[in-house]
Length: 538
Image 1 (cartoon, one colour):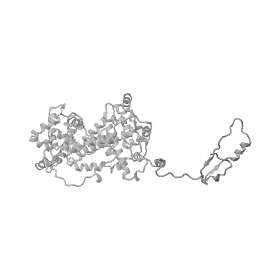
Image 2: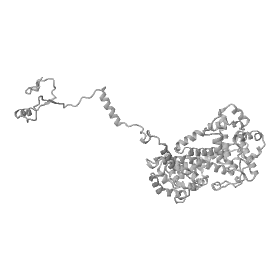
Image 3: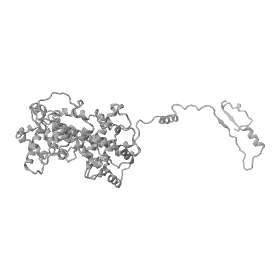
Image 4: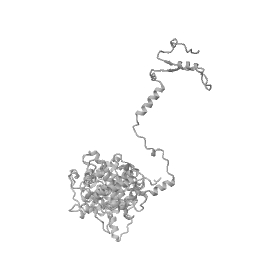
């Protein structure tokens, strides 16, 4: 049907009144009166443009377009709760052999062949310009507070472990509690600091255990643990940081005195432990004592460090002559060097743990029947090159008495003779096996963060496993109980297992005192196989 131009629009009721039709009537009339140019043609049809002035009708609730529109708007507003990982960690292709070898060869961790433990705690890559900026600005202040010369240590010779002290000291202060600091979140800094923290805690525990065992030769391990907690517990560490005037380096953006306890303790603990990890690696245990008591000002006579009052058993037995009548100071322990012809690697520690009265047990039934079997299983005595044959014989006698003490349960003699049991050797053995395994894991897992190594350490040294390793060697048969405890333990595994754990740790303490740390490694990784990597008999 053709639309007549002269027709009125009111004749079409099917179109609503709110629609307007716009037609160019005057234009069409003008085109009819004046012919078009020859290159144009007259349109055959006239188009009608319809415009709607009303707003669009809302879509129905079940309309797919409406649902898609709402979903799009919701995605714009709601953000995910967990941030996605950085893109550099997603589907990263592995390095080829050439690049991997180059990465390891350029790593500072493989630069020191003579100091494998120190080398394993260095950063996994070279320090950047940001790291050197912090070193140039703050390291002199840290070294001055700790009492070290201000000269750069990289000028030392390669055979001096102190050459790496500036690098380790820098890592020790980079705790992860800085607010959004890119320097601290770098992988080589973050992992380096956490590995120093992991090592430092066991260095402190062993150092204080040795010192307190020699300072208090008659005390049981319970009060000594309380003294250690009062000295280096997390509540008092901010106090020691302030004593050494290091609070501005640990809390550079905060007022130390206005911080809450929960804000002060984690950074202080992290830096404190890492510092002693670095000091132990570069200077050894004597320097740990100096920094603890001179720089940080630990006070053993402080009221907060005293153990709880408890009923003490009367100790009527003698102690070694060097402990009689006086308390050793930290200077005595730090500067002590055993003589050339000493029976043991740590003579004073042995005398502090094994009372002289143990000689009354020479020749008893256990010494005649059980001692040879225990020594054969443990591989004792070790071959030693002594200048005088009598020294070897005396050492082997003391070794037998020490082993008998390791297998003596507190129920046997403790109430009459408080030190005639394995408790003090067990306390020492706990700390030395912690440190030995920590060093082993650090050297074995070069690229692992400290938190992962800490969890690995905890799983390997669980108490149930320590007793299990002893029982696998059938050494639990030689433990000396009182008659009453023997009857109750005979058919109760849960009572018996803690005793086997304690004996295992006491053996490690004895081996450290007599032969030193290398023998503890031998016992842990060759005899008892703490890492469970040796083949099992079929």
